[in-house]
Image (cartoon, rainbow, N blue to C red; front, side, top):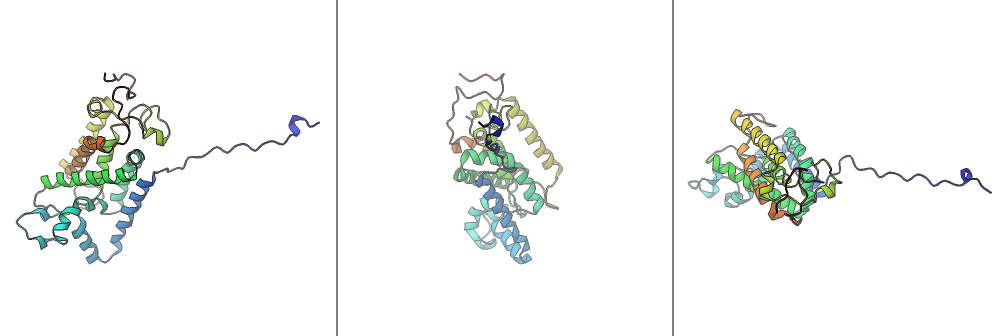
Length: 264
């Protein structure tokens, strides 16, 4: 009779490994898109300039005293540039800075919203940022480019659920998909949460410092369009509920902190 040690042993089960960079497909496609569009810098300078003129956001384009042909694209460009500017970037540093913020916050939002809602949300917050820039830079000729307004919108939207128990910034988070689908806080509760308020204070403070100091990131001689950042951020914070497919359980949603009082 075989002894227990002589019996064939089953090979140990391999422990599944999480990918080092486990991004949702919608966010990966978005990053690939803006990287592919940036290949425009390899085109002749005249072509690159034409692309900027056609797709960047230029406040002067909306001057009612100008004729429709004053800028390339005419009247239709007045519509599409509210979104297309967000897909253009000055250089790789500019792209890298935006992608760095998208990795945690954009990933959570893309998992929560799904591809269609995520892309629509990015477009809406880009348009909100462009509107804020237009209102504060009327008649400006300098083109605005970059996804920062949309990125700011994802940060704001993620704050509605990021600190809820089990979410991706809580102390007891679950896996990525579960963490992204916890019930969100209502806007009023989010604005009473100490962690959310601390994040808002830091975020607005950094943007005001950059704006007041005329500092730039990623493009020589180009200032940060901080008003556009704020426009995208405010839109993301307020409009989040219109895009959110997860039922809002306001009365029994898990509190963000053990000391939080649940609304009754």
